[in-house]
Length: 291
Image 1 (cartoon, rainbow, N blue to C red):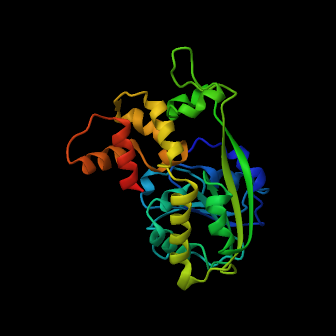
Image 2 (cartoon, rainbow, N blue to C red):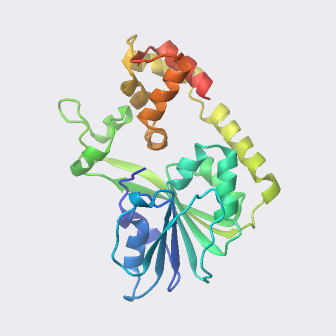
């Protein structure tokens, strides 16, 4: 997945030790680790390992300090011995959360917890959701809210969002065209002391499952009475195309990990036929099944 979050807004909040080994877990097309390396004093300071299941999606760098590793992040990955290990996770956790508690547990226990490292995680999810998990797994968790600024030149990389009216992100024709006032938020977590939290290895999966169930069913449900009424207002009795449904029903954080193709495939599997559009009643029923 691709983020437009500028590294310049993140790097001031990321303190690295001298000569660090920076390991980017699921780097994708992000350049954050390389930008961090460039920000260090000294020409030869630090090393970077970019890890991704599909390394062909990662940018190519000629810097001899940068190496690539093709690996499955849900399985244990052997890393070089290093006293100054720094793990970088830019939206990887957001994606793995969509795979369920078992995947989250495998990712954390195999490649994050138990390492003597600083773990930086950049996420769309706030403290109520993701901070709860981290605070029970690490001795120390710090979080800062970071602005993600996108100018008009970023319009091609964004999707129309009904909530963006307040940010003047539309042009006079209703097209998504963010200007200098268009600002979104993300969260930068700094986690230290892995394995020093309240949850231990044998109970992590069950604890994470319990947290996700409680959060989605009680605190962030997509099918509360208020949400159904909101959907009725958005649909105005019309049958909307699937793309419009996807854009209206899911916020930017969910859309970043739950693409239009994913949504379309699940709707058509649920319906058992090819689907061009949905009415609000169909959407409510689908969300109940999905949840």
